[in-house]
Image (cartoon, rainbow, N blue to C red; front, top):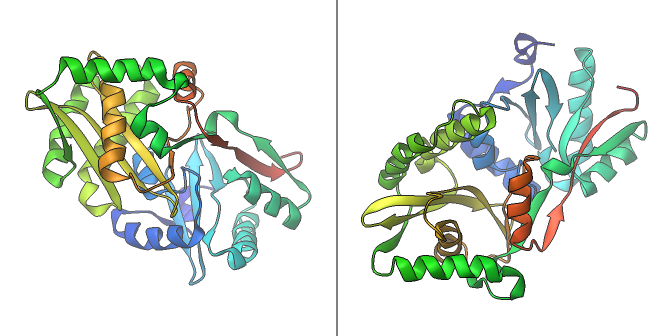
Length: 301
């Protein structure tokens, strides 16, 4: 099945679709990081996205490295099975393996009740790291002592020279210029990340998101962008900082949460993409829990 076939049922997602997709996401109440509008725009060049819409649910179809897959249906719980069966009927009509990806353990179990002939595979590199917001605002406790030392070093060295600003359409454009300093054409994942970050910054005023920047001596040196998943959990989608400045990453994380999302209990800081140094960095912040993710398909496919 190619994209020409897909468009008979699935419509390519565009900027104009964002408000409606967000409405379906809010119905779903998922706390998994891929089911998030900012994340989708961030990675849409890497994972092209298509949507199929009915009144009670929306289906999102992704394509990665030539393979199509379905995300968790965007709907209230009572419509989950109906939506899932509709997705399978479309895949079956085109003779395409019905592959599901980015499913949480709870939603995987529901799929297996409906389709017991399917099997789930844990995709460890895609697991989300979830932290207590109050922990990353205070940096208290023995486990965060090294991170706290970096943070305090930043505050001491740059006292009176730094300022935090909430992100606006204007300073979002300033952040785009900063990205040019971090371009690396030899790292494909980094290039997709930076291109996606650029897309998010350009569309920032259209997204259900908040952001923040840190200026040092008037120049933006770090920024973060986040959004809301559920009543108790926000998501930090993007975090960038000048790596040469000690403690700046810790500072932008802390200040961003204090100013933009202090009322939330948890923050989902997404997965580690299977990158070892990123995995170690995320573990070092002492996650409260992980959100496991699964890929599902029929046994033997």
